[in-house]
Amino acid sequence: MLAEFDDDLAVEATRLTNRIRGVLVDVHPAFERAIGPYLDKTVGPAILARFGGPVGLSTAGKRSLHTLVTKHAPRSHKRIVERIADALGEQTVLIPGSRVADQVLKHPAAELLSTMEARKELEAQFE
Image (cartoon, rainbow, N blue to C red; front, side, top):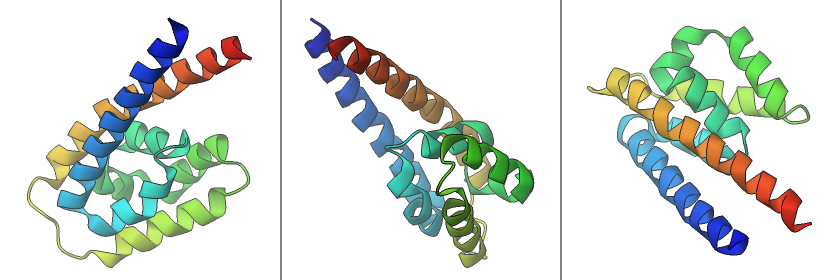
């Protein structure tokens, strides 16, 4: 039963990740490329759940981003913050719907974080 539940959680994590990627590609492809490699780690969904997307990150400030990233990725936080900052600087045009996309991204990102935590708890039980 637990293995089947873990399979269900894995499918849900994939669905949520794909949804997040789809929204990001529509509004800010460079940002999707920057954060994409971190969506399977807690740092990527944590950033999106807290700040939303590119618009929210642009207004959040580097210090609050740095604090959050350091919490979830203590060894690679500088590289992640740099990649995000570079990606946000690449796109100069604000795509219609970007603000709404920020709002939309927070929910699946929070769900993805929750799903990841549930899988970690199951992993501990398996061990």
